[in-house]
Picture 1 (cartoon, rainbow, N blue to C red):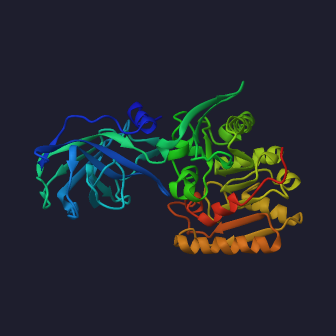
Picture 2: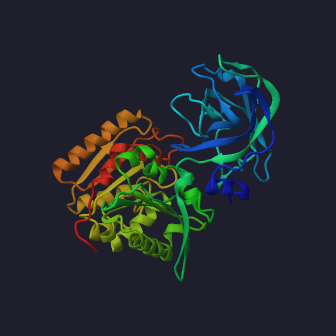
Picture 3: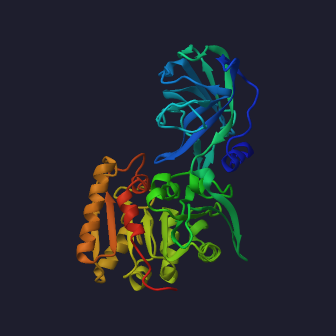
Amino acid sequence: MLRAGLALALVAGAAAATGTAATAAPDGGREVRAVDATVITEVTPVGYKVIGLAIEYDGIVRLGRTDIDEGSFDVQVTLTRPGADPRTGARTVLDAYTTNAPALADRQRPGRYLVLELDETDPLAAGTYNQTFTRFYDLAGAYEVTQVADVVAPSQTLPADPRPVVNSGVRNPVVDDYAAGSFATPAVTLPYRLFTPQTRPGRQYPLVVTLHGHGESGSDNVAQIAGNQISVAFADPDRQAGQPAYVLSPQAAQAAPGAGGWWRPETQAAVVDLVRATIAANPAIDPDRVYLTGLSMGSYGSWALLPEHEGLFAGALLVCGAGDDAAAVATLGDFPIWAVHSADDAIVRYDAPGSDFRIFTALEAAGVPVTWSEWPGTAPDRDQEAYAADARARAAATGSRHLFTTFPAGTTPLFSHGSWIPTYTNDTILDWLFAQRRASGV
């Protein structure tokens, strides 16, 4: 469960400044002082990471075009968790610049903040750890930064100062943009997050429903959007700029694999009720463009609810799961599905009874056209999108509404079950999903 400090930071954003300070040279006749720091996070393809640290001053810092030496700052982190020794060490600073908000920027400008971009591959970059379920470090107060060398510009000098500045705040771009809610049925209460796009009067927008994996189960109402990219991939500003959409991400309660979560029929029914309630409460949602995506346990849940409720959705993207192949053949022959699975998946076996692969094989045996594809999940993004574009073109040429992608053994990032890592970074696959429309109203 999230500690209270981080939970508050994730929901409310950066906290107020505290008193640890470092001095700076005069600006407009007075000194500016470093008064606080804010951690900046990102949900990367391989998890929730700290990618930046914004040092806040009590006045404007003006360095013009002066290039700031990254070695002028020393960043240390202490990550604590119950029952374990703290993890401590240095973070690598990749870039440094001033700006007017505690956020990464594309260029230097005058402002109250000096942002340090940090290397997300550092051993201590992670904001989470795993104890069966995804758990979050309390990042408030976990970072301290010391200026170890002068930063000299024609208009201003920031002198070195031995006193460290400790961060009080945590800023979570994209994650902080989701509203939090809770949906109750007589059998189940679902925490959920809802991302709402920038809307225009008279227009309607898709809704993406995400069902997380077993590791993101819980009641913190954060792990399902910050544990991996299943949700934020659709809320990402770049994607929203071209394909604005609502994103609905409920969270299932923790339970033993197969015994609860999205495997539970009452929870599946609650998801359907939540989707219908969300559509009813948001007239800007296009009911003919509601999409379902699930990974691992979420794929199991998707395969379970689709046979009875496929009319609610326009298409599905399912990753490394399993279901009932007979039910799928009987009901989903015309329903668009793209499934992805690693050939050497050690958690949900590629050819286990009811696996994605088995379902698609059964669909093809029943006469349903299936487009098969295979490429390395560790290939460069550009290559993977080209492979996906080829699969999509072949599907269009044959009228296939079912596509299946295999990542060969040894080509899935991090571990064999993590086939969602390259899936949600593949814009071609996500574009295919958004191209689907429900055939008729339900």
